[in-house]
Length: 75
Length: 368
Image 1 (cartoon, rainbow over the protein chains, first blue to last red):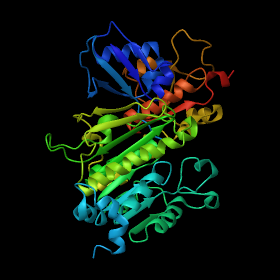
Image 2: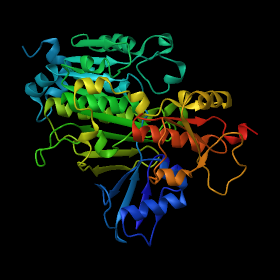
Image 3: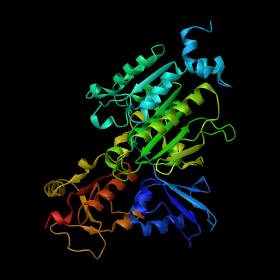
Image 4: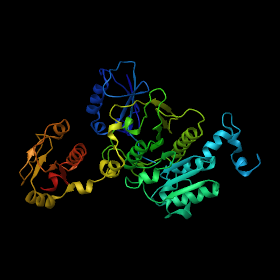
């Protein structure tokens, strides 16, 4: 599945997007990302699956497009 | 009648299909409070004043500085050192003297927010910190005032419309549906720390003004229920469908007095100085109070914490919910003082100050 990073998350990942396999749920994806990029787990980001915000754990498939959106505070 | 100056001023938008005198009259009868006269606030204020919103409130306790001028386009060199809100009002009066202005040369706080907001039909949040963003969101939820939200980070921006009841679903989406709790201090950087490209707040602020004008005039479809994001370097613009969380409304203070007693600065972790203790302060606390020292490093990490009685519970275990022994207060320690500060901040947030928590500044490294 395609995982796209926004804001500071892209900076932490060092890339704008990644292809991720071997995860089948939002919780598993967050855990995988937390292991790969430990500082990412400190940021409470929103997860969108196929352009819809996801709450809690939902299952993911290889065709899904995931976006990870951190809060912005600047003005 | 059609030649009076008011008609002429707004003629170019009044002749738009679907606009007419009706939409213009709605704008002229509306009032908007704009929080923050900064990068986002400047374009929002300019377009709302130009479009003829009947009464515009401006709240900002900050003064104009030279670092503001690359993006805060209402101000010039002669304004440096002057209060932003009243200076912005002066410029806007020169642009459109036929509407009303309410100036608040002060930051919005939980004490003054309710009085400041009451009576406005719409609030626009162009502030620059999480404490204000959560405060403004919660006040708007409490007072049931629609909120146009915009925020930026470096090259990216977010726009949303909150607190407008959804016709299909019957509920209102609010900021806490996207981000239920504020991030801890330092997790997410602001413009002063991370930088911002000057034209970006111009773009995002214009999108916010557009949302405000659509809501107030009743023309077009508002962004309510969606988040719009824009990336200035790639021109990618996306909208994301938002979802009502089951717990978001419960996170907002229930009453005006609960709201006024909420310390938003504290919730957003702006308290590092009171949280960190040096070696002497730790000694003093140990001698005076019943206090538990906890080493939050991994169990294999050395050197051992010298001098003081302590227990070891690694940070990961605390975060995953391991119960701490009963104590009136905790002092967390680690190697450099960073992890222990993170734990103390997390602990205070989780337990909302029921137990005191501190962190040894500089960590064990400062003792040896």
